[in-house]
Length: 109
Image (cartoon, rainbow, N blue to C red; front, side, top):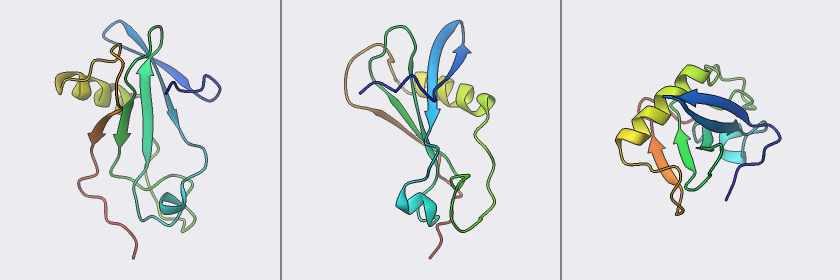
């Protein structure tokens, strides 16, 4: 499934254009800090497999006012590079590629 253009941001990593998007509103579990923030990335010109990155931070819009860091473009670029090293091929069609970076996240009870 392709990312919606509205609300997505562009980023260039190693000369390749990508688009990424973070949900504005958290999911129910993200709102309660039971699960960490996630965002999606895809190739800008020839989208195929979507990269889904799970962070180690709560969603910035969580309902418990739990502090967390915003997702920065440098974080996205680092995640893209790591996913490419792990075998993500962004132009090939297929199931989403998951990059799990949740180590250190402690969910709320």
